Length: 102
Image 1 (spheres, rainbow, N blue to C red):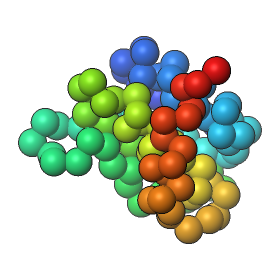
Image 2 (tube, rainbow, N blue to C red):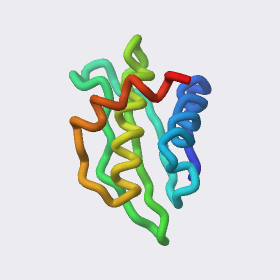
Image 3 (tube, rainbow, N blue to C red):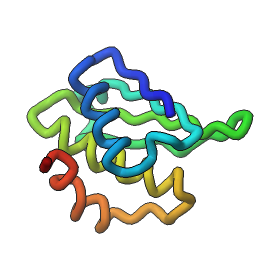
C-alpha cells in the first residue's frame, strides 16, 4: 500500500490506521486530500478505481478538530473496500474511536 498526503500528521495517522486495520500489505494507493469547508460532511471516500490490479482510493477529510476520527472512519471503509466487503456505516461508527487507543 502507498498512502499520500501533503499534511504529514494526517499521513502518519493514516499509515498507523492501515497497519492497525491489517490493510498495509494490500495492493492499493490511497490519496488523502483536504475537504473544502463548504461540504457538510466531515469526510468522504470516493468510489474505488482499479488499474493494473491496484485499487486507487481518494479520501477527503476536513482539517478540523474531528479530522482524526473522520480519517479513521474513512480508513475503515477503505478496509471494507479492499477486503471486498459491503460498506458498513455501523461498523465504521463503532470502530472509528478505537483506532487511536494503544
